[in-house]
Amino acid sequence: MSGQTGQAAPLRVAVIIASTRSGRFGPTVAGWFAGRAARRSDLEIEMVDLAETGLPERLVDEGEPRPPQVVALSGRLAAADAFAVITPEYNRSFPAALKTAIDWYYEEWQAKPVTFVAYGRDSGGLYAIDQLRQIFTELHAAVLSDAITLPRYWELFAADGGWPKASADCNTALPAVLDRLAWWARALRDARAAHPYPRRQS
Image (cartoon, rainbow, N blue to C red; front, top):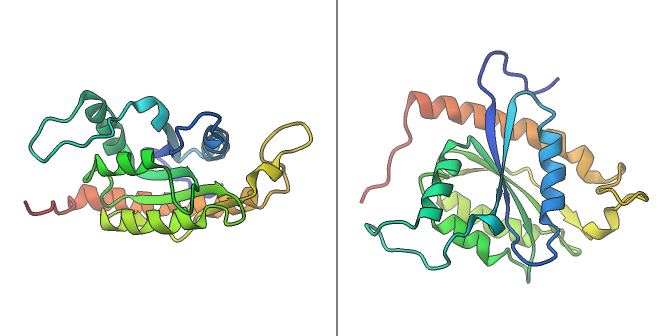
């Protein structure tokens, strides 16, 4: 089985559900991703649903105390070795709740790999992914070139109502994405342990 690490501790992957709107499809996509990833013994999955975190929309200035909801999520993100962002594409971009969540944090993202699973209409979320790559690069995350796009995702339901159907391209794309996410997560975890990532200058 690919991705085995012997006696090494499992890599912690935070799966972030970006959509918070009523009737959202994000939990279905996240459940598929997490279910497949959880089959691997080298990965430990934590679901981070932004609809449940209660992050305030208004950010505080540097030096001001952070709200308890922000502090609580900070610990979960800091403990992660990698991130998988599950996002819809709205108007050629991604949800405002995701940008707020990203902007509340800085060091939590640093020197960790990030991949994306985006869904939308014909573009499959490519516009959202392109913007997120720029943002996470600015935050010193290691952005994978590998991502999964789901154009016209509503057409991927199986006859029994399950999602996605067995013939969907995302099923064959996911193993390579997980392999590379795990490779970077392991390499960067070892690097951070040996040499802490330099802090930004105040």
